[in-house]
Structure formats: C-alpha cells, structure tokens
Amino acid sequence: MQHRDPKATLHTLVSFFGRDWLNWDNETLKEELEKKRILVDDALLDQVNALKSLFLSDSPWLYATNFNAVVYGLWFPPVDFERDFSPTITAIARTLQFMEAVRPNQPFSSEVCAFIAYRAWESGLVWFPFECADRFLAKILKDQKHDEEIWKLRDRVKREFEKMRELKTLDEVREFLENVKDRTLQNQLYVLAQSFLDLA
Image (cartoon, rainbow, N blue to C red; front, side):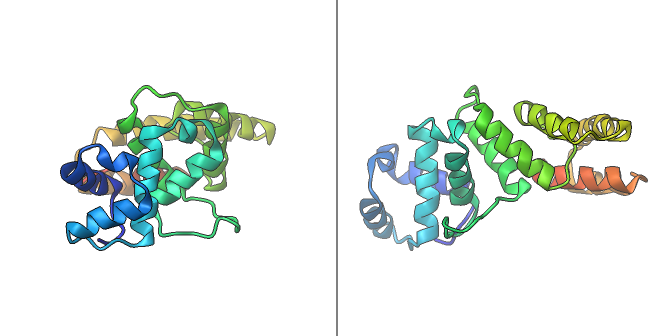
C-alpha cells in the first residue's frame, strides 16, 4: 500500500478491522494488514498513528507540535523532526478539514490557531478561512503596521473566496480565477482554492 489519502486509509482500516486497529501497536497492525495482503511501509504506519491520535487524543487540537505531527503523518512520508520542517498551507488546510470531519465541534487551542496563522502569513496570505487562525493572522498584520490597502485586500479576498466556494467544478474555479484582474488578489485566491476547494 503506497502512502495515500488518509480517508482511503481510514476506510480500509475500518472495513477490515472495525475499531480494533485503534488499540494495536505498530507490529500488530503490520501483521494484520499483511494478512490482508497489504504492503506496510513506514509512511503508512505514520499515517495510521496520526489517525489514531485524532480518535484517541485531544493533543492535536491543543498543541502545535502534535498538530504538526498529524499534518505530516496524514500527508507526507516520514521526516526527521530534529530538523525544521514546516508544513505547507495546503497540507494544513486539508488536515483542518479532515479533523473537522473526525470531530466536528472540537475547538482548537490558541497555540494551534497561532501556529496556523503564522504558517498562513509565511505563505503570503492576508486572510485565512479558519476563524480562530484568522484572528491571529489579523494581529500579525496589525503588529506589522500595514497600511489600509492590506485591510482592503483582506476584505476582497474573503468576499471573492466565498463566491468561489459556491462553484461546482474545477473548470468553473479556473475561469473565475482567470477573470480576476488584480494579480495580488488572484494569487491569494489561487492558494486558497488549491488548499480548501476539493473539486472534481
């Protein structure tokens, strides 16, 4: 089994094992998957452990380090955490959506929201469609004493992204983005579309 979408991995685990897999260590998990003729590698084990943490612990919602580990476990091959690895804003967005599906009403701590906001800011975003993180992003921008133009851009990005969310297909999104004449606005919307819109 190659590293794949965590929804597919979760579906496979639940289909074969119900909830039993949540209590297995890596060795038992590997044995049980291999009985089903599924090749197990480190990336798959990392992904399963990230999934487990979402079902068995609140820590990914509370601590930035744990949230970061889940992002990497769900979407990336194994990494050396002794080095500085910062997840992409797309991987963060996909993780947020996945976590929301697992626990729809679980709040995120200020620590996690600030971490997400900082990554959004590093990615060049001025608005982020995740309210608790966007509050921190607005504070970052305010602390940098940006002029009024940045706040106008924030409003435009939010307004135009909400319009994009109503589109049904990838072709419609592409056409929408092509019709945005302001290059800065277009770039902001492109990153958000790539990160948050799951369109066929």
